[in-house]
Amino acid sequence: MPARSTRPADKFDDDDYPAYTMGRAAEMIGATPAFLRALGEHRLITPLRSDGGHRRYSRYQLRIAGRARELVDSGTPIEAACRIIILEDQLEEAQRINEELRGRGEAEPSA
Image 1 (tube, helix red, strand yellow):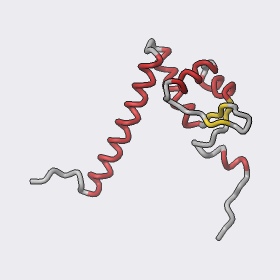
Image 2 (spheres, rainbow, N blue to C red):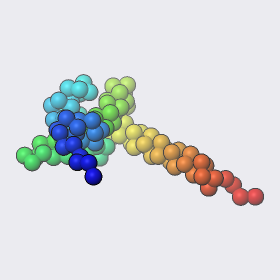
Image 3 (tube, rainbow, N blue to C red):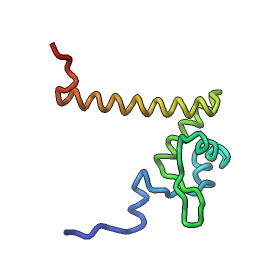
Image 4 (cartoon, rainbow, N blue to C red):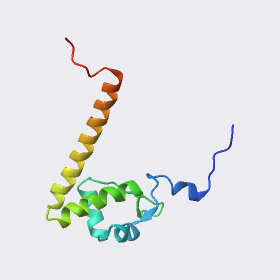
């Protein structure tokens, strides 16, 4: 069995790897650390913690935070923005499952 690469650079290709500090994450999405903390308080994203207890964000989480920032910048209250994003995610998942079931013929109505 070939050995898995454990080079640190390989982790940065993983969308779920918590590679970014709070300061860097905020800078990347053009927000403040307080904005990222607020997203955590509203349970939109939950950053992982380093051994020292510092928040660390993944690229996936930054995409979600970026979408929240777009909504907030357009005038949507942060609470509503978080709810919208959660509902968008749930809708996308339901559509994916529906397409998967249709592909297997399980979503066809019975006669």
